[in-house]
Image 1 (cartoon, helix red, strand yellow):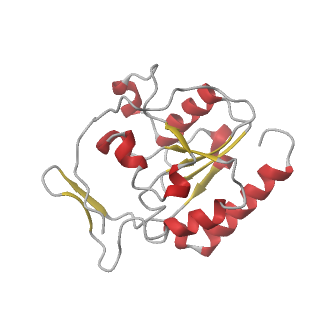
Image 2 (image 1 turned 60 degrees about the horizontal axis):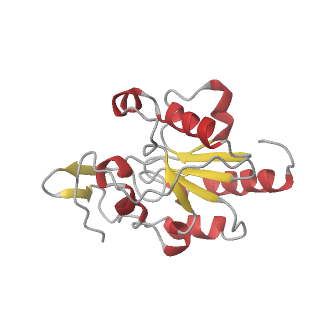
Length: 189
């Protein structure tokens, strides 16, 4: 089980340089309720703990590894609050090596982001702002938070549930369908 220390607003100088890439395909990735159960307690002293008995951090990560394996050029942008709480490098290093190698940045760490403004934005708007900066050809988001998503980009959200995350076969099938759509399409999705 991972033992994580809570460090609010920690920033890392080693964030990769930000560049827009018009041929890029991106998965915006949340952690909680995607890679593990969403019932996580954050405490400044104790760190993060899983509240649901029998559950562990990142237990569904191998599912994402398997889903993305046929698409080696698909990149990941972290859209999880873990970047804000632990720092970019620490959040990234919670991932498997294969997923970590896909990570090109996060929605939070960008030179033009004003922290106070970012914190008031819905997750969907945070991701949309990153899409507008990076300009990927194709993108989708894995997240349990559907609140405040702009209408024009809701079709890019694959919503997960707190208790099942990526362990839900229906979510897995939606990811497979989205990836098939992205990789057979010559135009922006």
